[in-house]
Length: 307
Image (cartoon, rainbow, N blue to C red; front, side, top):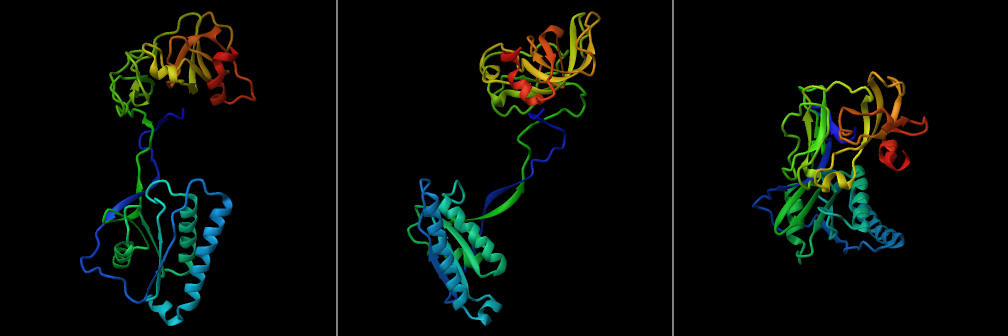
């Protein structure tokens, strides 16, 4: 199921802006530093506007690289600082994002010679930000309220609920503890209904270990869930079971069940809840065999209207 992750799951690397100290000796940039400023763009800019702005910056960069001497290029004294006002720490406008992409690509061919500085609307003069960029030696900085920030990749915990390491069976339920409960709740005693006491939200969801699975009634089947459908009502209506639609593979059938059989792919409803679990129990008359053309995820999202 897509809502949970195995123990030790990795959320990958994400870009974070970290504050960086600027040397106290930082002063005005030397004569070897050229500054070019790019005005702020806008979210409403069209493709032609972005292309025109990018072409303008490209001409400036090419001119700088052509005019600086080979000797200066070798010792790194001649540098071009491109200053933008496009909120690179938040959601940059298309033109600013394109400019940063262009400079990053050009910098790979001319390391140490092209710097990027992004300032906010409150920064009237960019001189301090430019001086900070030169003094820190960072290729990219964002300047906010007199503080320099640099982009860093950091490992992030997965934005998923984590399966309990000591339980082979589990289910998803609401805890009522508010956002960020993150999977701590009382241990469940069976694979029966999943209820929610009071209104809930996504932050109330928790992965709960199931100690034992109750024996099947004569007309019941047990399904290894591959996908569960969870709608807004599951999280906002008091007392509604979490996960009443699901799809998976039959692993066990009751004494009076003739169809479906163990191993069949099925989709259907779980009136007592519990579809958001490793395994779930329902009456065999509440499911149907899953068509080959339908995926588990698609079936779980559409079970109620079609069955």
